[in-house]
Length: 528
Image (cartoon, rainbow, N blue to C red; front, side, top):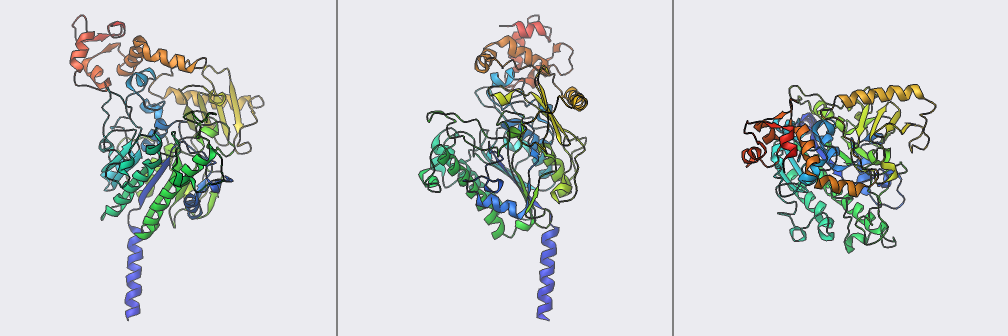
């Protein structure tokens, strides 16, 4: 009889455990290349915890982010939409730079957002680590993470509570660009994440842990470097930083095991873009940025696969097959939100249209053939040879890339030529024309017209000139702020466009020379 009671109790426990809403842990690395994992064939790096995650889940080799730099890549994850739809084309920076790039100062918190949707569905939500969904500078007072649907947050490269505050490594506080701060930021973020998971009661959780590694400054302590005693620099510091981040992942996996939450938690690991381009001198800030694309062409800021094809490992016991390597399913950053909403049985916001697709079948190991193409645009600098493409489309096995004026176009079959070494465009003019037409059609759906970057000849000089030229800045701002395109800025339109709105009426009046309550293009752009 006692045995029967025990068995029944065990059945009830197991049934309730697996019928509960799944938790979500999204670990997002920074500038971490596809090849920066032992399980991806790196001959020297030690990543035992991420390798374990791959053994216990599925490792997807055809996943791509939606932009080759930080902010837009992250915007695609949390909105399920291409970042260009929100005016996010490069990383958020100071206000003059954002205006010159045709960007807002932050991702609009009114956008459809995964954390807010899950929060409203009863999830406890938190974000720890890198933010970079807003710019920085004296004129920028960005919304706090709470405005995006997070119950708790501690960040760097963003507003609000510092990631070091209230942690055991608070005395190591610093920015991502000094050696001490860079070595301890992810450790601090992980402490917050551990505390959050322990504190969640009677609720499922959605948790972002966005790592510092391996963004510059890549730094490691002497203790970190003990893992690689016989490795020369700059590799020694880079490898040590990667392994330090891997240890933090291990701390989270251990806690999920301890609390018996592992079986009901979906864990993602990915990176926001490919590895940074290293610099040769020890005094250079990117000297230690020696990440690996795993043989893929291009790096960060490139639309070749090395810039956008990054690790994507998913573990969800009893749902996602363990130990599987998927080399064919075409997945993208915009797929995360619609897939999670489907997996968690949470309704999307009214009127929401994702640019992604539900990839749950692929996660489950079922046959999956993507029907929608994947698109990219790059409006940033072209400082390295592989950074020349401005637009790209993947449809099926083929990727087409081209530059701004279509004087250079290349086509690759990325299944048979994953390293993109053999341009087959000359032999396939019809396919090139078909893909170009699809790419052109997509570009026409974007809310802003394509703006030529003009940075090929001299990136630094051109960027500097753009920052110093108020007429250029105001012209770009006028186009963005004139929502109804009637050639007039009202006070409301002007105010909505400003990052700092407190003195908007006074500033508006200074431009409004004829005091008619409207700003013409000439009044706004020609004002001194």
